[in-house]
Length: 257
Image 1 (cartoon, rainbow, N blue to C red):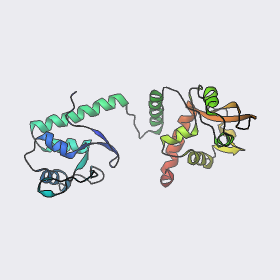
Image 2 (cartoon, one colour):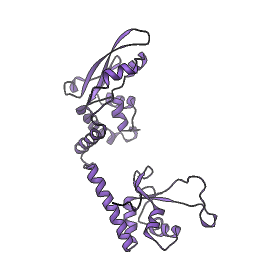
Image 3 (spheres, rainbow, N blue to C red):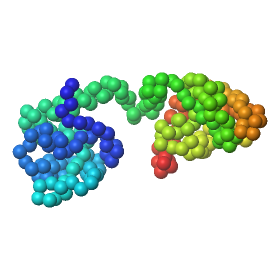
Image 4 (cartoon, one colour):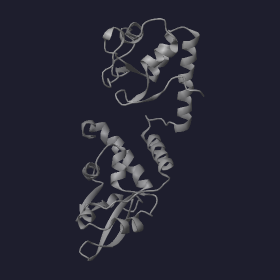
């Protein structure tokens, strides 16, 4: 399928979006862009700024005809489809169908789940991460091991070969959290507690296959032989955390960051 209009992720709108000026040009509108965007979007009472469209940041000094600064906008894909249909032209219908086809291809690729169902969403999330990461996990040293300054090469040889397990840091990044914050939440939920320098599950959750522990032998910078315990989460444990956090953020929305 030939690309009529570039579709990209827009951080401000948290959605796929298109450049409004590029849409206007492709629609072959006879109106000036500033008039077109005001009539079709800004003053139409159909769209909300910040949700359906937003200003694009200016890069350098951009001058339009007459010496005025050029103002550009981003439109969500849904907004772009509606605007294309509002043109009531063959070109508008063609572009709207193009957007629909792009969405269908994306949905077929992503196999989007029903996000209103936490269980289904958790499974789909885990499956998607598995595809992208190929079930290969990277296990990192916890704070105690970092202080001991164990050699990275030895750590990679002994630990990183273990597939299908995940550090709390990896899982936390998926939610935009730090490892410390995720550990704190799991502690608040009475899922784990700290025994010396190692996080341990409460008895209620032990024996359920959520975590596993690896013994890591290494030589520190002083030439001393050391042993540390690495607690990592299994695939089943990762899904368990996802479900717990989904429920947690329903009542603690301000603590997600």
